[in-house]
Length: 240
Image (tube, rainbow, N blue to C red; front, side, top):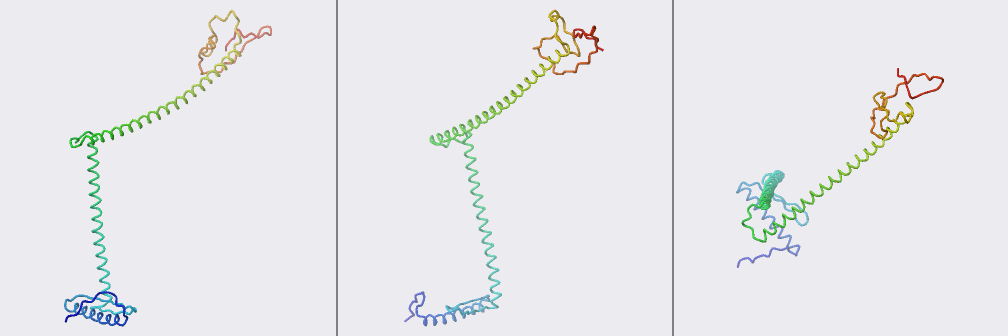
């Protein structure tokens, strides 16, 4: 009779488990030694028992086997990492190309090109999208125009206020000019109101007081005159 098939599971009996461990450990180490000799392979085996005891075998030295293992593992990880990164960027490039193609196709449809393959419903959806886009463009344009109008109104109000201030200053200077004329030349008689005005330093003395005046004023020259009989007369001046 042949051996029955053994179920691979944990052996509950500690004695049987220890016996099986010893037999299979020895068999594994023997196979490792044979593999190293027959195939000229570098083999390293480490076994820890349930009690923590170490059993090992190395065809050369365990340290060199471990160093070679770590180096090979790092190289394999780098290769896998590089391959994985290449695949990732390939997927990203393919996705971007598809997005670009979709955008170009949508743009051509927005421009009214390549519409032959669209159904009535798709054309209706495209028309709705265009109307929504046009409505947004018009709203933005109206908003910009309103902003410009408000800005122009604000600047116009500022200019108006400046004009008002300048008008007040002009009136004040005009009043000061008239007061200065009255102090220098005095009040004319009623018989002389229609006569031509006397020009002094380029200023018209008999002009209408409400007419615009020249804002460039000059100081009147000092008048030297003799008053006969101790009486002062301002009607006739002798200029020097």
